[in-house]
Image (cartoon, rainbow, N blue to C red; front, side, top):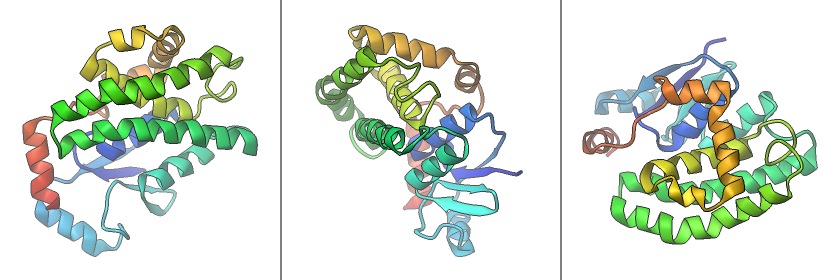
Length: 216
């Protein structure tokens, strides 16, 4: 089975897909958008129905829209709970992580310092106590059940960003969340991913300029 992910050579909306592919143990190739001509050719190909990326080609399908891709992978690789009640909890916790992570996505096209200020002063105080409370009352290995789900991987992406951009001390203030975060980072496939070539580096001015050149 051949799997290909098409996006820019950065994190953005594709990084959560990379994290899920890693935890599922899947090999895949990446095509990076680096020129206007390449972008125009992709749009003409008919593969991206909304003229947006990421694009994941898998199982003979051409999938767009990050949420749709994430849920396809979650259902296929058992990261979506074991029943409808668990699935809706997975959705709630995952969507919360998307609201949180949006402030980091915005750094590509808006002022980075303002985004980080909002992350520290608004998003962390709003979301971290919620997840700390969930983890304190949790009797299972993960947020929902004893198997990892996209709820865990979505939150992991947020925690990685907080540690990288704002410092581990913000996570230290939430002991259950810290313990959980360190456990997730130590998982074999996640640990390998974080050290490997599919894990993208933080944005640089050159990367942002390239994205603007290709897409606009």
